[in-house]
Amino acid sequence: MTYNSQFREFIFESYQYNPQNGEALFNYSFDGQVSFTERVRFSPQTGYNVEALDRALQFSFLLAGVSYYKAFPTKKVQTKNIRLSSRQATFFSDVYKHGLSQYVFENKLEPSDIAEFEASEEDSVAAVEYAGEGTVVLQSGGKDSLLLATLLNKKGIDFSPWYISQNLHTPSVLDTLGHELVHPIRYVDTEALSKATGQGALGGHIPITFVVLSYALIDAILRNKDMVLAAIGHEGEEPHAYIGDYPVTHQWSKTWPAEQAFQSYVSEYIATIHVGSPLRGFSELNIAKLFVENAWQKYGHQFSSCNVANYKLGQDNSELHWCGHCPKCANSFLLFAAFVDPLELTELFGGNLFENESLLQDFKGLLGIDNVMKPFECVGEVDELRKAYELALLRGYRPLPFDVPSSSFDLDIRYPSQAWATEMIQ
Image (cartoon, rainbow, N blue to C red):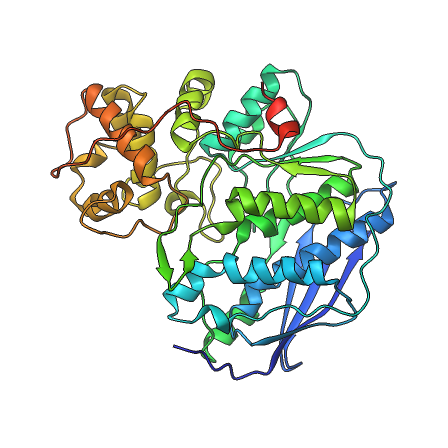
């Protein structure tokens, strides 16, 4: 159905940065009537490139607005005091349109309900001259980021582990990486969003990876770094559903086209800073294999990719756990069952998840059975998960109570990636 917002336009009101306390403020409103303010607290720094920082702040300002725009999606947005070139306007329009696809699907909206950014007549100025050196590496406590940290350490590459959250808690496993953790705090305007909910606001998933990457970019510039690394394999590109010819994905901002678009924007409009993932060329199944080979001995019983058990707002996630009942746990169990002996993995997850009746529909979605839709989570693609299941059965795992088609998935397949990023771990 077509959504009729109670407001005319979403306004990007203003942004600012306080160098004394390191706090960035992003202000938004609907028609100047319903207002939101997002705050991000960085560690104050000196000697940074002021112009590059302003470009990065503006970038984050426009990306982070999606958290509030989704409340009452309007057909029009106004970027007050910001002039966008046609290429910039297209970039942000694509981020909102494709990054909100799950939100559109779950709220029964139409893709045309999402606003397009308007270009000004003038082109924006080119990227600033920038001379930084050093690497920021995003961390979460999950398999991908810990694997990347392990591979960089093996190559002797110095880096700053970077973890953003909405409270002071950090996973203790990040203290074992051998580098000082950088930990900015993001304060989402939950009070204003809660009030908006009482006014009929919508909710749903956003392209959070782009928002987080943009904040890491700010921190990199504050610290005069010239590289921001994410730990993202080949994922997010297999649609969960379609609305006409509009693909619905859980995390468009984790895809290869999205990484290319992000890097191009940074290079063209902000500064000469590399942003990308050294793991991009690997499948999720191969990343699980590499984790077992390189990082399992140290981190196998300390990491987790389970959002339910670890990443709810305000939750103390100093020690990471698996809930054993969610789609992320089912996906992770599938991937690691291919390479880890049953006794050890079932102990870690509290049992053989293939025998957990509450997860049967999730496994059917993950494995493409009975037309069950793949769960909206960051999970592997159907064919590689079928291969993982085959390998798990060869390891002696008791099977699921339904047949799973065989897979010809090539574990050693290499997907496109940015050459500079791939070279860092080769």
